[in-house]
Image 1 (tube, one colour):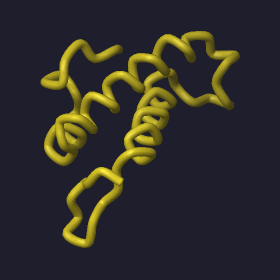
Image 2 (cartoon, rainbow, N blue to C red; image 1 turned 90 degrees about the vertical axis):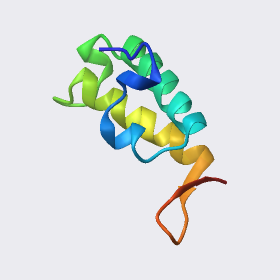
Image 3 (tube, one colour; image 1 turned 120 degrees about the horizontal axis):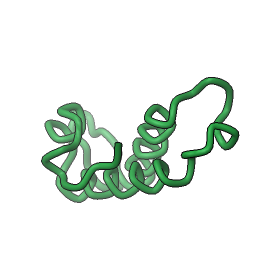
Image 4 (cartoon, rainbow, N blue to C red; image 1 turned 180 degrees about the horizontal axis):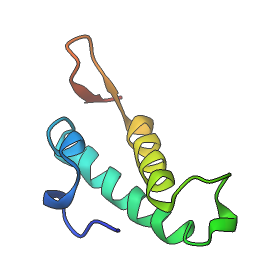
Length: 75
């Protein structure tokens, strides 16, 4: 299900990513949720939720990376 606000994101996102990265995650997840609603658009048996999370993390990793201290920082 799409996320309406940062506060609704999974703890693994809220507790570790900066606010801007959370916004990227939320927007990418919601976009993928809409894009992959048809099972024929997904590979194999992957669920709509799983593909949306994968797309969201990929979007975050385009702009952020973990530093040596394990914190997410903008690239």
